[in-house]
Length: 279
Ligand code: C2E
Ligand code: CA
Ligand code: CA
Ligand code: CA
View (cartoon, rainbow, N blue to C red):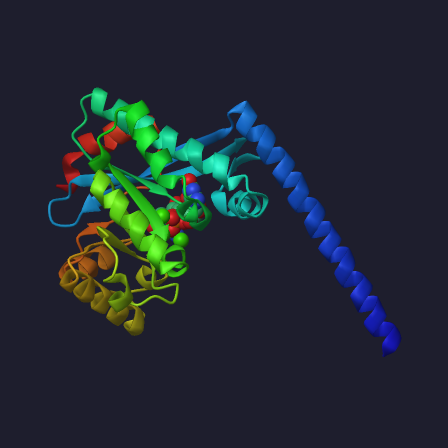
């Protein structure tokens, strides 16, 4: 048994080494990707459930790898987080999203917000406020067009500094949404302490709403409690007409998901807006 245990241990360390090497390789490639301009943003429409109008888009990071094709963020954000590359990447994302939003505005598209995902690490940095300010100044985007998405986890760390940051962002006119609500440990009562604009119900509660009575009940309760706190509610991962109708009947304000659109390249947003069949 002893021998077998040793063998397992060796197997385990070999696995660990392999994983560590893989991560190093991805990190190396990711650095190159930034230098070569292989990162890009796609934008997923967010639709007002009452009017059918597009009220915003969420920017979602993609890596257009020369050989491997389009790589989704789940494949490289964890490596970026661990290596600290997430900081320059996030700065690029913020700048690129704001620049694009300003460009849509200059093309004469009706006003809508652009959502940007902030990593917890970025949210905790003392230079976040300065960064947001300088990006808004350099791109000329109106602050109320920017909607920063942060997860519950980021708010749960240092409550006092989170409150300070959110208050300062609000004073600047920037919107802040809580992302993936329901997956962390925070409660709505807890969120009450923070100045927030929107709450996004995590897609795990939207999925299967039709067949999962407890998901349906959770979504309904979250919508009603959010409204009592004065928050606008966004449902993510809406894929079917049934989901959309249920959420709409519960008073959910905004929906995002494949039912309306997959994330699109920037140039396709104008076309989505022009399609009046939703209205
Ligand atoms: P998220 O912020 O929760 O983003 C929503 C994810 O759900 C996106 O995946 C989107 O493509 C996907 N999605 C949208 N509608 C549907 C639907 O109807 N059904 C299903 N099954 N999925 C849907 P994506 O683009 O792969 O992004 C995954 C995660 O990566 C994001 O989750 C976010 O946490 C992170 N991420 C993406 N872009 C950035 C970024 O610029 N910075 C940071 N820090 N994280 C990012
Ligand atoms: Ca998000
Ligand atoms: Ca989300
Ligand atoms: Ca998510």
